[in-house]
Amino acid sequence: MSVNANQRRLRLGVIGGGPGSFIGSIHRGGAVMDGLYEVVAGAFSSNAERAIEAAEALHVPRGYPSGHALITAEAERNDRCDVIAIMTPNDSHFALAQQALRSGFHVFCEKPLTHTSAEADELAQLAKAQNRLFCVAYAYSGFPMVRQARAMVANGDLGELRQVQVEYTQGHLATLTPQERTGDNWHFQPEVSGPSLILGDIGTHAWHLASFVTGVEPSHLTADVTTVVPGRSAHDTATLLTRYANNARGTIWVTQAATGAEHGLSIKVFGSKGGLEWYQQQPNELIYRPLEQPRQTLVKGGPGLYRAANRMTRVVIGHPEGYQEAFASLYRDLAEAITAKDSGQPLSPDNAFPTAEDGARGIHFIETCLRSVANGGQWEPLP
Ligand SMILES: NC(=O)c1ccc[n+]([C@@H]2O[C@H](COP(=O)([O-])OP(=O)(O)OC[C@H]3O[C@@H](n4cnc5c(N)ncnc54)[C@H](O)[C@@H]3O)[C@@H](O)[C@H]2O)c1
Image (cartoon, rainbow, N blue to C red; front, side, top):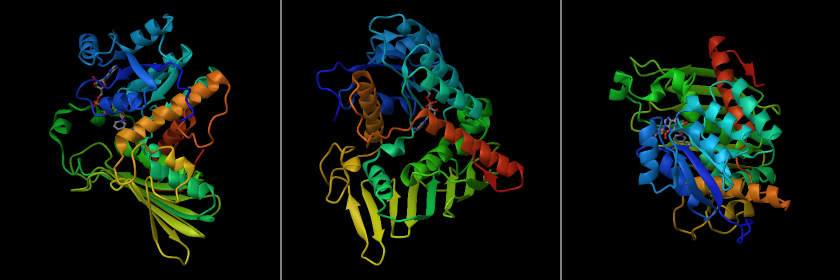
């Protein structure tokens, strides 16, 4: 790890992610896993009282009644936060991230980054203008064997890219949920969750994973974005074809309405010299199919891995690592980048946290899919 052991821990301010939230404990646990951050401030709810109570319950020293109050107050302190982590529902990401950047903080923000590409592009430009680092929580890019896959593609082990397939199947929306009937869940409120539930919630992950591993973005796509469960208004399923500048082809299938499915995220990449397959439910293995040679299963911590994969591993071979560690790895990549920036030391070429530009590309992806649907499934160029 290239972070200076004598350096103080980075001070983290957390917005959202209170007790009982899906992602809060994953962020907080991931941030502190390597001893690089301390959570010094928090605004853990949209309700002012509960926000402060939660800070006390979580033993976070500086509790604030809102995210905006946190940023304003922290900006005035000598021992101010270094990084603001935003894990609120989607509609508040833009305003909070914008305020944090304007106040000079580095940002770690949940996906989907914003509701519109204009907002997302603005954040990417603002981060650059303010000279601040901005990590977007595309967590699957933190898994060691995903880093291995990316390194193998970058190293030419697969030859020229020919085909890419990403599948992300979940089953928790296979039927109408009680909260959906009562409207008591922000995911089903488009003004909060964004223009397409399925594309924002997991489509952006699938899109980023394909480009993270292959190192290229498709030039065009055609999309079918729909609702397969009767009585539901939000999109629960999307099927896409993609086309690359070199004539490679891809498919993306994302759904939360696959009955009985758990967390079936997988990626397959095939090139002129070999293929790779990674399955999120067996995250510590990567299947490698070299042309006209026997299939190999590469394992986390095992022989034959690139440094890019080994640096993301904390536990010895045979011991599982997963989602929590992947978040920790993104927090660590961000910490290393901040340290390199502050000290003027070079940053490892293997440091690869998803940036605001990656977050913005995810929003352009959503808008391009919806444009294709509106145009009757026409092929649309990516901006
Ligand atoms: N990267 C991933 O793998 C991943 C996984 C799950 C969720 N997410 C993203 O994380 C975000 C939160 O999702 P979740 O499932 O944890 O939601 P959630 O509803 O489970 O929790 C949201 C939390 O934020 C708090 N909150 C809401 N509005 C707030 C505000 N304005 N200020 C401060 N606190 C506020 C709530 O009290 C709650 O504690 C979403 O953007 C979602 O897309 C990402």
